[in-house]
Image (cartoon, rainbow, N blue to C red; front, side, top):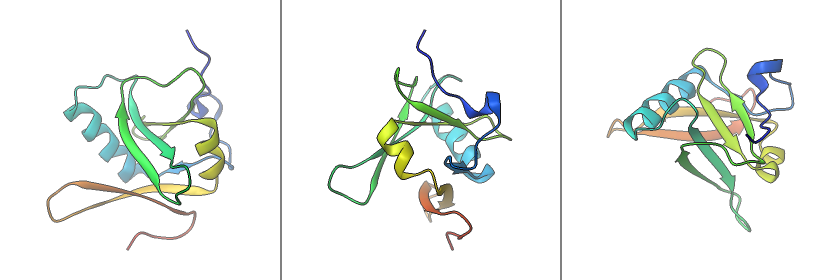
Amino acid sequence: MPAVFDPALLGQPEDMLHITPEAGLAIQKLTRAQGVGEGGGLRVEARAGDRGFGMSVAALPDETDVVVTEETTGARVMLDTVTADYVDDKALDVSDTVESTARFTLTERGTTTD
C-alpha cells in the first residue's frame, strides 16, 4: 500500500490547501454521484503553462499524491507534489451555478468567492 500523507491524521498544517466545509459537502456529493468510494475524492492538478487548474474525480490517490482531508466532512482532495506547492496558500471553495452544478474555486486564503 502506498504511503500517502493525510493531514487528517496529524492535524492539517498551516501551509496546506484549506478546504471549506461547503466544498467538502460538494466533493462528497460529486463522488457519490459518480460511484466513488470513501477512498476517492477530487483530484486537483496544475496545468502546465497555464494559471488554471484541472479538477476531476479520482477513485484513489496516486502513490505520490498529497491527500488533504476536510475536517468536518472527511472529503478528500488529491494533489500531486507540484500542485500541492502551488496551492499551499489557497482555499478550495464552491459555489452553485444556476444549473445546480458545483463550481469549485481556488482563492487566496481570507478572500471570498462572491
